[in-house]
Image (cartoon, rainbow, N blue to C red; front, side, top):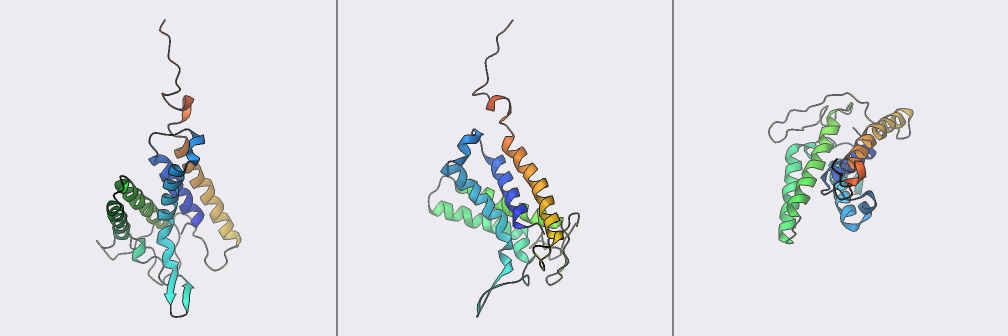
Length: 194
């Protein structure tokens, strides 16, 4: 599975692509932009909340429930619908955008998890990405997964380094998309005809 670093960078890339019109880079630190970025980062990491189990003794952090139905498109759509309903109840003009971003970022988490090695067979190898359509588990292991046993191992350093290299490149490309050549038509110089 990607680490929270990879999922966070993926969420930020989705946020950067979703910003229309593209504000100048200096305007990305406004409360509005940061709010949308926070939504995307949260939604892209929330599927891993299944690492937390509530027991009589309190909160327990384990992988016993990891890669269950919280890692499915059904759960992503369900959460998106809940966000939309909540937005409509609050009469927010942004309910549809918040729901769409939540669903897309949540689904991106599932998509990224499909491509990592999963050697923790408690819930099955892979994840039930297409639940409730099917209970089948899917996995297409291309990237090394992070080790849950030794967080600071060399293996994890390499895995996080690969994530940072790959996902930060995607994030930066998304951030710069539409901002090249003078930051759009607003600042473009008029051409003089010959």
